[in-house]
Length: 509
Image (cartoon, rainbow, N blue to C red; front, side, top):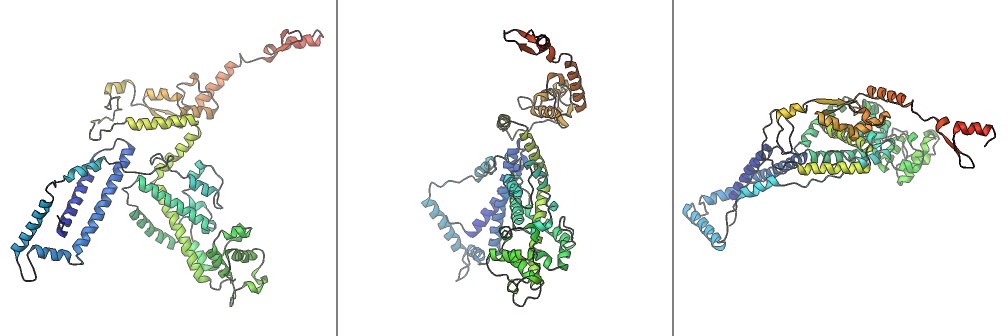
């Protein structure tokens, strides 16, 4: 049966209402794991996108630019070219319905509720790399390699890069005008946006950026953008300042060619030199000014009608100011995303430091334990467990008895200074942690063996004092070479060092 425009409108409204109820029902369920929570957020995001697209179609229908809706309503009322005939319109529609069911006698009514209920069980496909661990950590290795192999970067470790990548204001602004830095910042912003959209799909990133851009415009006009303070006013006073390239950073033509043809052209125009030729010719011409004053350069290098470095510089300066402004805006967006992802960045730092203290076998074992823990968690999302005292869960997934909770001291907090002031809840967890990697790593850093003598020791000073006492006590039984070092003569007789030395002096050996 053909769908009329009014039927399409009714079905669209029904779909919107169903999706709204589905979103409410989905959000009423508390996801048991982070993975399930991420699936839920993406399901809700997909449903919202569907509602938006459906609503846009409804708006087009109600605008009725082609008068199709108006004509259809008139046809339902029986309006024709000859006049109004309601009964004729009614029997025509009835005939159409009967004809449809005669051709499709096996047609059945589809329950749309079943299809929509299946959406609650859907697991959207979310692409994460192995390093990202399903959105728990950032994977900045490619950007890290790009940073350490650049002129604005430094040769640092990946763990140190995680501390400095969100602080572009520490980089000299002259290095920020290069194409290499612009590409790096664009790639970094692109990755952070992509990661944020995968981990926080319900956040409205467009609204966040629009608010940020409004604040940025005001700060840029006042010269208050961090890392770019008063740069705009200083450069307006000297039109050639922005277009001039600091040649102290370049020693060869090949290095200067990396700046790009447009940048070289603007710099040559600001100096009044010819701007034509290949990229190499432009770089060679500009590099001549590094050690030779403009007054001593051959006239063939100057453009016709040029009388100084400020000739034709205003247009280029305006373009360069806009270019630097765009870089500053990218930096501002990147910093905003770093603030929103601050918790994830801290978790990434901890994960990198932890991996440095683990062997490959230990990392594989920990990964398997995490996967096993995720698989064994409860899948019953509808079950609401009453637990007002926030008691720990037992083996059956229910809160343990309160008397057992108090008996084993599960509500007590134990802090270990050797583990970096890490908190352990419950006596059992505290006793077990002495054999875990975190405590063993802390003892290794102190140069103390992790033996039974140091059980229950959580203070660094106490552990060091106990280690000194043990070493002094062991000094009584320490190895004495004069009495315990063995020597053998030609006949195979064994002597200690003192006896062997005495017999050798007497000439008996």
